[in-house]
Image (cartoon, rainbow, N blue to C red; front, top):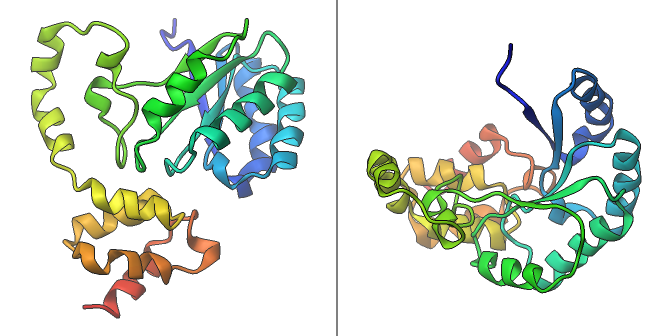
Length: 222
């Protein structure tokens, strides 16, 4: 008997069509299906509305706002939340998955707390905010964490807290995939040329990470 009850299905904007076919396989097998369209900031209002209508036909357990680059300020975040909330079937939960590239997390969550809704809302949060790139909402801000748990994870947490978050911030400001920032950090590229590197990434690859593209651009600087 499997202990797995929930499956999160993540897909990029350009993978939308095949993803909406595949998610039904997960649901038919009886799992609680979480649908996570990444880089939601790249969708316009109509695209979000149209996708939400398709999500209603699938009836997942949860449909998630995924701010992959951490670029949603309070106004944009609430606009997207309202598009989800106003158009989803009542039994579908709304998930919130935020990244802190531009320090919008606390502002967005506080704004969310002021919205009255009967719908279930699920917030992704991690110890000390540990997570990809600039990190996620800080779990300790919302619930009490056992001290032994924090000690057990100390090495991992120390490593995360030492990450150069400046590059993730610059990636967000230039609408670039956080993996580009990770590549620059791994290769010890100076912060002073990071913005210029991001600006030279072709538009079609900004949110679609391509290692060959970043390697070629970086080679022109070193």
